[in-house]
Length: 479
Image (cartoon, rainbow, N blue to C red; front, side, top):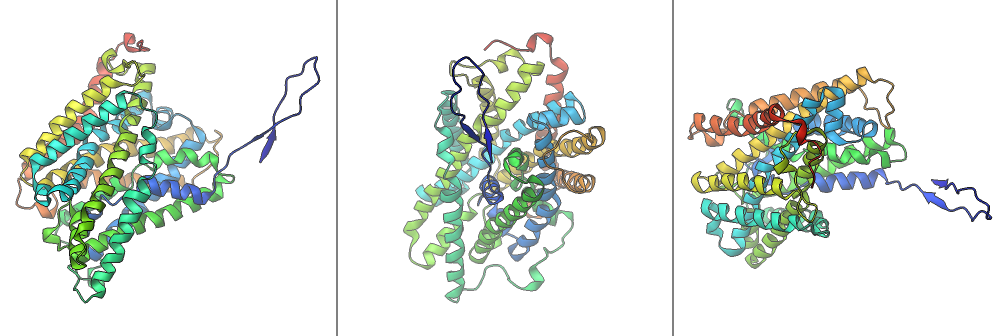
């Protein structure tokens, strides 16, 4: 669509008018953008332990969480600029808005240790596979990678974002497709699947509430849709095209999540599967069947490169959003608001790094690396779910209090969508406090203490303390 540009009127003859082109994106392009930001191979080992039932465990949260989150956040993004802080502040109040943006930032404190735990186990297959089960190795890799990322980000490197531009292809599509193809070939050679592939196994076996706890991790796998919603205004017909884009993205994401998980379950028995190194275990086993184990380190390097590129891209993002809100409202003390000479919030990154270092050391003291990975993934999910609970409440209140506010997109049955999304998020948050069946031999009390302390302490207590201690002098602190 071409819109004529206005020219100033003056004494001189008017210059030829130039046209300004409004840039639109297709709904297919938006679907692919969403897929690239959500899909990953990292959660595949977590669901591979369920074999064929992983289809059910991926599909349920996609319907009750992914879809409501995508459609509701699209309406909010098309009506209010400023992200989740603006939405929740307008819909509920400013303290709730601060809590929402804090949770969006705080989840990364536990997200990076779990992400880098995956990197450590993957990297171990490049150097020495025995290191994959070493907590000390995992802790060292987490600390080295994170602090290197802080150093790179604090220098304001403009090209950091480009490091992850090929992440979907290099670290997800190529390895995922190769894993599925080789898995099919593995079965085609007459090898028996490690997990039963009969209709009786489509639904996970019920062994009490703990048997479904792993579904909680899928909520984290699908999170981040509220960030993609900002592109709804770039569609020519948002009302028709955005739902189509989200349904296509959901289908692609499900394929990327489910097929590699199934391939892993064909090759690696559930009782031998590592939640951090499962992808590499499957590659190693499949390559061994074809006498091509020399390819295992190459795939490991591809996965590591994509994960590290993604970490660098996201490292400063959430903290920058928190910084901007805090400088306007005075939510953080001056020390955390100061910028370095490159204009980067280095003090926040360093403080976050100190906490990340403490968390990384937990890998060295928790006997099972998979257990540590799972615990940190649950804490990450629960902190993030607090933000989603606030977002769903704010959306309903804004529809009722500002029914005539201009919106580029109006979600169908908004109240029902928010009700489903809220109930699913709350259920996932509560289920996260139940130890999964795989950890039946561990201490329930210790599990609850770590998860509750991490999720509720970091997600609720810390922002409450910051809010209560805020001072007028904390606003607009000079750089």
